[in-house]
Amino acid sequence: MTGLRTTVGAHTDTGRRRSVNEDAYLARMPVFVVADGMGGHDAGDRASAAVVEVFRPLAGRDDVSVDDVTRAVDAAHSAVGSIAAATSRGAGSTLTAVLAVRHDGELRWLVVNIGDSRVYRLVGDRLEQVTVDHSVAQEMVDAGRLSREEMAAFPGRNVITRAVGEERSPADYWLLPIVTGERLLLCSDGLTTELSDEAIRAGLLMGGAPGRTAQALVAQAVTVGGRDNVTAVVIDVVAGGASPSAEDVTGGLSLSAESTTIEAATIRTRRSRGRAG
Image (cartoon, rainbow, N blue to C red; front, side):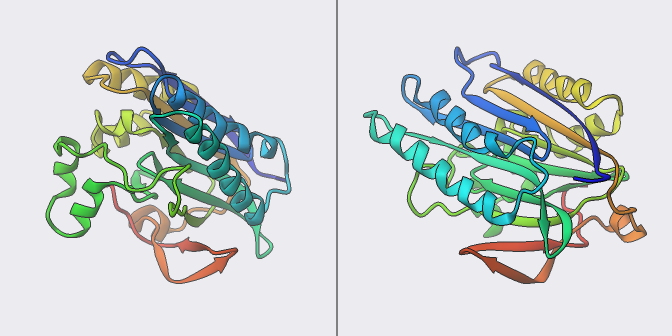
């Protein structure tokens, strides 16, 4: 990762209503992961821990490829599937990840998502939700039956349609340019259930070290409700990325019309759209 410099911080909290923290995270260049486990007894925390452990060998490397990441996703499915098979109530996990990879000779962020944990991106003062939830609520939004603002109060907001460990639950992938000065947030739904996009944007814009920002966002979510485990990973690109263009700052980043298929994974390239604010 010659020339690329980042600062990173992370924080997690069990919340007010849960006795066990079933979230897990990994935050070491070039790999950042948040996993939110689910299942009976101790299956949920074991599932999320298994997801993180699959990605851990990629931490500290400077040669991570797209193929390395797709293999890790496959291994995560296998690991969580084994846990699920050993318990009567099953097990599963979300997965959201950001990794710095070489693709077509360029260093880019590869964003991965299964489930309803999220990745946000702040460029200038423009916040974008990069990932798209795999949830019943998101499907209703896509169908025009629910507004984005109504998602947080929707009774079935926590029902997901894809999970690590389940068959036919492919990951979504996006390739993003790495931009100097940008701030990325990975978080579990314990954060987004309690905080609106505007509250998240305000928290990220407060500045300060990533660790302090992650802790403040988690604390705010717990104070507001704390109905679930809450995890946040914050990444600042200090140097070595591209210079933000006017389009990056004012228009956000978007999917291009074209996509590239790599080992059955659809890799989308984002350029110019803002979703969250």
